[in-house]
Length: 222
Image (cartoon, rainbow, N blue to C red; front, side, top):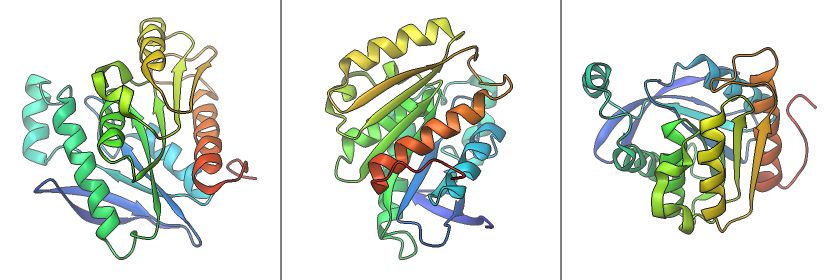
């Protein structure tokens, strides 16, 4: 199934996105990439392909404009601006709900690194829209007080060798009051580059979204 390029109007700016909707999809996963990354992230794109194989639609967007990315490459100041990233995600969520092609689809968030914090803040701001959240190697602690207002079922995935981030995820996990799960992927580092690690992430994410957004336990590829 081919993705198509879309222009997403989010919080008053036009963002580049890649939208893929499998036949019969009833839910869509909006990807929030991490610090210094983009919608072209090979890791997120691999996860997105597996989710689509499981019948879930996906939208990968650049949360920063081209001009903002150029500034961020020099200063790294915007990738940690959780408020700005969350505002863009909320805008993209509203766009999805208004777009005739996607308005019927339930929305979930897949966030990586700082994008995970932005996804949690967006879910707290749009509790009626967010169906489920998955964080991959995320910094949910950066969501701050928004953690206590998240109502969407949330899965935190962390590499077993990513020790500092495990600690930060445990702290954030304890502040969440929604249905939640913290999964440590053995032998994986922060980027899940080890053989089989990213496939494990995609499997766990697919199962979480399938269960909480479609109401079935089917895994990707089955």
